[in-house]
Image (cartoon, rainbow, N blue to C red; front, side, top):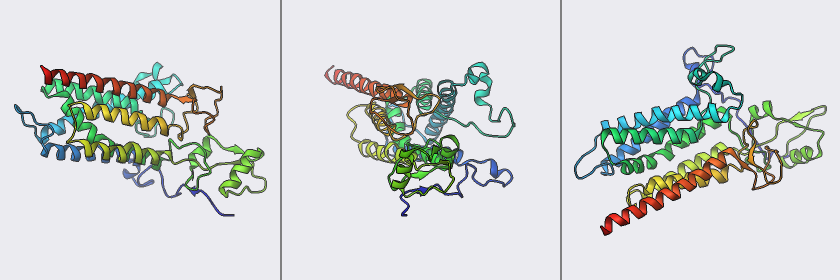
Length: 330
């Protein structure tokens, strides 16, 4: 039987070097964050050389962009963590014990876990607040700096999704596509009974054999983390990078990033399995089957937030466009 799936590499662990003192505490996901921030800095540095951050009255420096990114990072991490724990966690633990939001140790075993759990949309809101505060404090043109940052963000974001893949988390729905991946962690949370006819048929289509006496099976899934890394990261970055010197008004690239990311993420959410404890926010057919898509009108929490991003980006672009026209005709 031909295998039409990929087994998640057994040598990949969440830790960079498991079992090695000190280095065993470093996780791939954390390392990817460092790569993301470093990439954003290098792109902003290039934009600085091109004069994208200068005004006739004021020249910007590398110290400025370092300070700008640092402020954005702090608020991004706060927003991402707060949103993840208070919106996506349904246990109520963090509402009753908010000091645990930034507690990096397991409350039971006391082992170091890092800040496991970050929300993109929370990071988006937090980072935006950080950029606004920095620009107001340093008296810099807000939309010019936000445009520059939005050109830098997507390529760095690619590393974050690669980190999710290396962690074996945020995997997609089951699929018979030949690039479907069997994620070990998916099997820990959601295996399927081999007594079900559809499971037997699905496994056969993938070339996945069922052993005698085997009661449960872990099925291949979309590597949705890699889909997001490419489309929300690399592809969106390339679009913004090519348009960076052709923007019609300040704020255009920031608006386009918001619309573009929201649109791409909305579509890719159909391939990504929603959190089991949240399910769908809207379900047209009344189904709560999460491991495969039964209707395009079954909408997840992520899609609701992406819709708000798209609407907000369109409104912002319209307002900024009208404002720029008024300035030109004044």
